[in-house]
Image (spheres, rainbow, N blue to C red):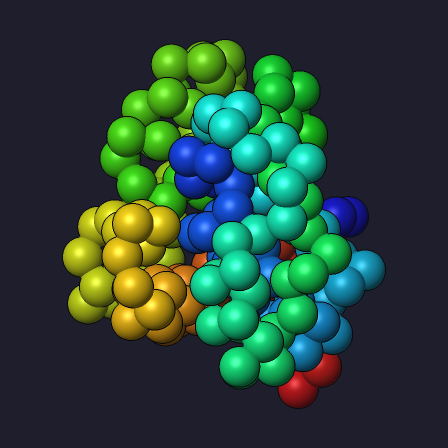
Length: 162
């Protein structure tokens, strides 16, 4: 059995690729690479084919997370069938996903911060701010990635490395 997770923000260059890279690293550390797959996408087509924002990449690399191989893409209809979890970074992007998601797959949608405590409800977009916004987003996404991974491991009976 394989569980698949898609992280979604607006342009797929800041928040969702950071979540993708962090979650991928957590999955690897847990020894669950063969059990869980991950990807990221944007609700808009602004940056298709582009690498993550340089500030997001620098923030991740400073903490030994490499996301340089990721490229932006747009969410497509097939994603709702392919992914078990479709995780939006904020309410605006969640609303766009809800509007295009088939009724039978609505239960696959969630907000990233549903999987963390004490950070509020939405991961703010750091694009128009300074480096400190990218650091804060990285910290939020780190905690939420761990919470989501614990949920998936528990709900799907996955046991990786101890």
